[in-house]
Length: 296
Image 1: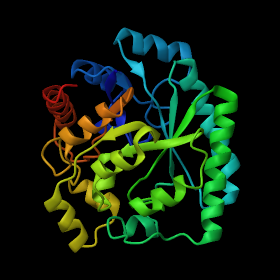
Image 2 (image 1 turned 135 degrees about the vertical axis):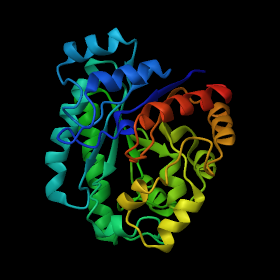
Image 3 (image 1 turned 30 degrees about the vertical axis):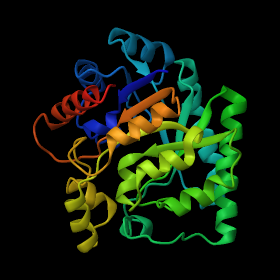
């Protein structure tokens, strides 16, 4: 059984190509230098999209391309086909570089009602018709992706979207083909939404195809809830702290993954957007050291 550890440009504050604070080569260098074996793609166009160019950049640093995170407005049926086209574009690049999973999420819009209520959701919000539209979109994208590239789709719950709490994850996955769509478990987002990520490991087991490791500071989380911060504001406040400094039970989660004989990537994803010099590299080093102490 092999669990591999990677990181993502998101941990360096790369939210978009237009406002990227670091050149891609510098981020890849630091991912390599802080001890990670792989990297996610980041926003489309941040890393080179020519397969041979990207392969050369990764090989020079002994890094593997693990996956990519794509979000689509899945509540809007008119967005499904454009979303599938973009997923396919990203998927072809992933497949060319040997990746096996693409991560899909609902649209992440910092100005949406869902983002404003992040962390304070208690019951599933979609109507039956909306569930049908949403699940149809995910299923269609998964089928197109698999047919054209052979990649599998891992759906990620995400705070500030329509699939945030455990009940919403359950209702969605129950509507999807388990051979085509698995779960990308994000420990920090699951905890921010009020759930226990260890229970998610126990419930979903072999359907967990990809993992994002993030921690959640319980005091900042409570402050964010009390002050009714939206998801973006909570992230800026530092709710996603370095691994081991919050209340996500990583030793038990990793033990649970080992018992499941999980073979795949765990990706450190720290949505900390604090503007302090060298914080990204220092956090990456801390997080890698922490996981090494847990046997990874």
